[in-house]
Length: 113
Image (cartoon, rainbow, N blue to C red; front, side):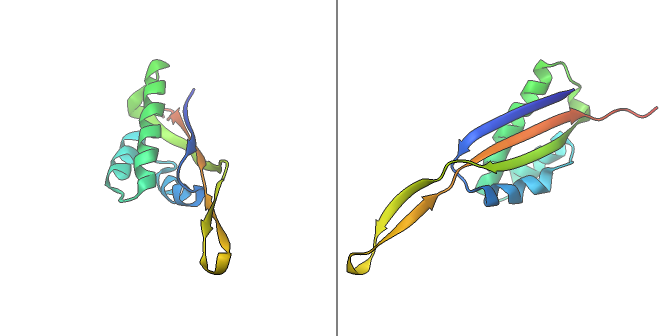
């Protein structure tokens, strides 16, 4: 059984979000929450909220919260907001504001007999 949470259109580039998500993939849910709490990155704050949502979804499904681990944590590309910034001599430079779709999937670890 799986529990999943998705945040769409997060205002952070996918590359920066993937740096954080790579560190929590495969870890226990509680351990990952602690790790996200202490990481000094904006992406960690965003991923922490998504992970808390996934844990709440797992609780609603009646899953055992002590045996949850992060099966998959991905950051896909979202749409890019484009803006123009004036530069010298009448030129302009395009600014690309990147967005991400962050997905975290939790699964129960099977107990070995």
